[in-house]
Amino acid sequence: MISLAICGDNRGRLVAIEGMSDVPFPIARVYYVFHTQPGVDRGFHAHRALRQVLIAVNGSCTILVDDGEIRNNVRLNDPSMGLLLEGLVWREMSDFSPDCVLLVIADAHYDENDYIRDHGQFLDAVREQM
Ligand code: TYD
Image 1 (cartoon, rainbow, N blue to C red):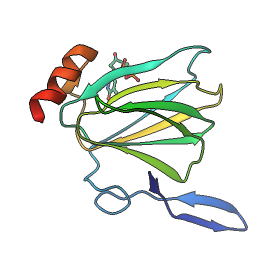
Image 2 (image 1 turned 90 degrees about the vertical axis):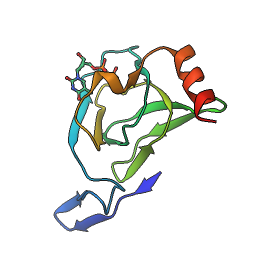
Image 3 (image 1 turned 120 degrees about the horizontal axis):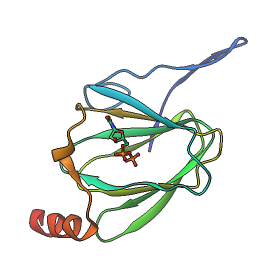
Image 4 (image 1 turned 30 degrees about the vertical axis):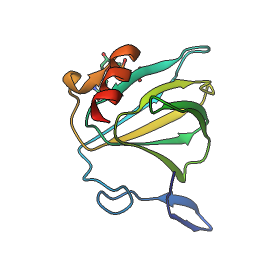
């Protein structure tokens, strides 16, 4: 988890995120997931090289993080906390609150070739890198 500094004053709060400083990579892409319908799960993939930070800037959701050995659920519900995902990590996203806005900051443009969408292939890739 990455703790993001909050600039707060009597007007409210602000979080600024700069590449190579607040997140440990140059920022190439930002996207956000919102209006996720009840009961919908997303993700179900790993990335070969992509580095990402996930932040629930509003509401909450659960990220299942699987490194091929250990599967951990991380609840994101704090706009000042980022989940850094790098290396071969299988991720599944679930339990989105209706108001959830999940912000994702990434170090590369969208590239379908970087995705591993089959869990068996993901486990093979984990074994190959050992
Ligand atoms: P998808 O990979 O299914 O999202 P998730 O991993 O959250 O379940 O992406 C949904 C659609 O959005 C799909 O058609 C690909 C497209 N997309 C882009 O065009 N650019 C992007 O940066 C991302 C993440 C997705």
